[in-house]
Image (cartoon, rainbow, N blue to C red; front, side, top):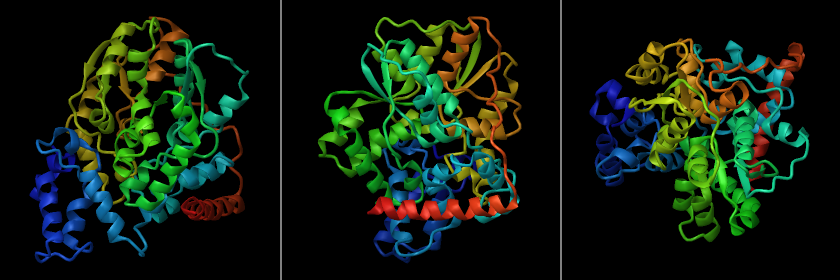
Length: 427
């Protein structure tokens, strides 16, 4: 059931309603091809959550239809501001990682939010002072004797929450694997699909296949901590190139984090943690394998797990940050997820593998911080079975925020870098 329909109860926000409007448009029945207000309005509240691909009786893939529509809708035209703010997040993050203190000051300013089309009540996630790849390169060299595994360093885990990626590296190494991170700037392109930037998304995926081809052909598995990136490799990639052998290899060899540990870490026993946990599944994870492995992993640790049948959290990447979507985004979360989080006992862990889901929980005045499954493993390993109920907060950035001149320079540099990066990747 579409999350926005559950809030609005409008027929046009059902999968059936949206599909019918698209059908009418393509058949020329009163609707203008690729440029119609009724279609725009219906698709605007589609969260691209992939729920319809998994739950719909006829498996209508509305996210793909929406991406294709937006691709035609804005061909040769400027897109809404959030499309650039969130669609090109990887390029902006590259610049921000050089000056995280300055970038965080800029991103938190009301003027920036207004320019990017972000709702004033939303808090823009902070860039970390040290990225996951920087941490990985600086730590003592390790020569793991186990099977080689690629940990996919997605934009969120690399630039915004490296603690999740670090916890995943340590968990995989504890399980006996030799962990490597891909070299160079690679991007799964998930936000680009949300805004219909399909040519650019295809260019990024070509670069991914080229960079990983040798590893894929040697059978190296790829483990992702961000469900939306894993879903791109297991779903969108094959829709682009169904006959491409490397694309098939990447789809088959890519695993969600918990699924990999449960199915591939033979003989490994996770550290114990005696606690209760509320588990919220990311929509893209539900559509590409489900959260059963997360439940199994947490229960093997000794946790008493309650799975939440709450549907979409309502954040959906950049969608819930947008000014025109805030109310529906919060209403989606308030249906079931947020009340359950608020009712949870203080020592109950809130577990959500999706960056968007964790952000929604933390920004909706719940007073709780959600953890990735990898962080739960780190909590057990570092503090023992009866360790603290909360996960240590990330340290504040240790670089100066700079002055107003630096702030203006950072804004201009970020925009120029995003544009230059987009042009470069097309070539």
